[in-house]
Length: 303
Image (cartoon, rainbow, N blue to C red; front, side, top):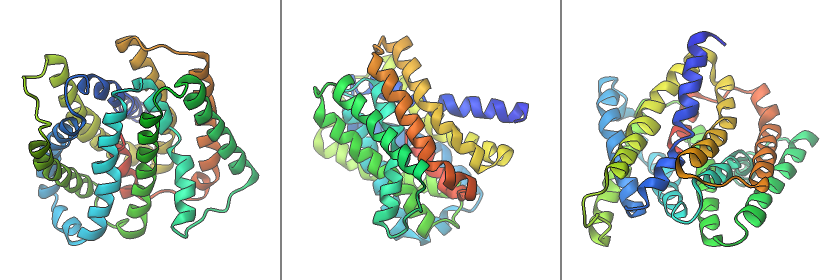
């Protein structure tokens, strides 16, 4: 990896690992719907002008049916449930549970009639991944926040469905346009929802919450996506996907250092098993095929 590639990889690993921390801070004072509205609106304002300049918006809007389906399962629903779950779960636990998305992706592929041919190594990965999630839910969370865990399960399914929709119906669309339009649609959907449900804050949020929203929109969404494009161009889409194994570690470190979250033995065990399982499940597919560039666009929205 070149020096530039390493720098981009490090920046993206941080940008995709810290959202859980800032979501946790934001939901301390704001309703989850307001958090989604704030971060999506900020990111859309930054990316839409670029998408218009590159003339990518019209081609995305013309494919409005899969675009809406993608936005619904990748952003509108998951971002709300993720923010809601983090009202009860440690940010590090949320990050670790979402590391199991590749495992869910295999199930989604079967459900959509595009099953992957799994090797014994892949099946072993599925087993490790399930054991890791069991360790986190049953022994780390200890059953005290099962509703939040169920919400995280919805998020994981949505994050697995999003790339599948992109791959089947929108693989030829430009990435910046897809992300910019989907973020704008999310903001438009949540604006009346926040107004009608009274989710608008009754008092001006604290500086830490305002900073969290800005970081979520600017760094973790808009900037992260642009860095991702540069990283794919530098090292290729296959190598870029290895960043999936960096994000949970960043989430754990951020939660411990900034929020004082505890790390238990089962946190470590779950971390190792989930990442090992995800690696083994996706190993053969990564070696045989390179994902389309637009498929990678959905990763930026997952956090």
